[in-house]
Image (cartoon, rainbow, N blue to C red):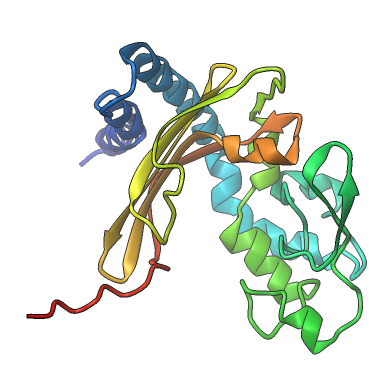
Length: 243
């Protein structure tokens, strides 16, 4: 196979992979046809932005360690040159112990992760258990493996319009503890979320823009292009059938 043929096959695979959410949403039951079509078009645009993110996503495990070498313990952001690989929630994770009132958000505003190295602070680090959220390893797992280039995803996102409502179809409780699907739209921006249980794993689809960020009153909604990913199922084990 020549390089040209290889690239053609690769491009076809990428095209089909990116087209799956658009095709899927066209078949969702109970959703008005005009919204199914609009969502499919929106997902096509999101795919283009997702592909633009791909190089930064792939390079994250290589770039983030170098960025962390120039990041202080007390820092809340990566160095300016590495801001694409920063996190849209926080450099030191998203498990904040203290929240204060914030007039712009019903959820309030979190205070930074404490600087002190205590057992209580280390317990916040669910993504790298046993490590302080500000440690090199915890930050690498958070930015270089778990949430790659999420700051870039935010910059490529869509502007929110808080004067507009959110319309939803499907099951809003869909999660890694509950199978189902959920489609929502806000100001012409769509997000499709689906979870299917596969034994001990959850097959997740998350596509469009993160409308769940509306509760945080962010000015932009990050692009998200996860056609399929396997994560641990968090629901309770199924009860054995009884006679």
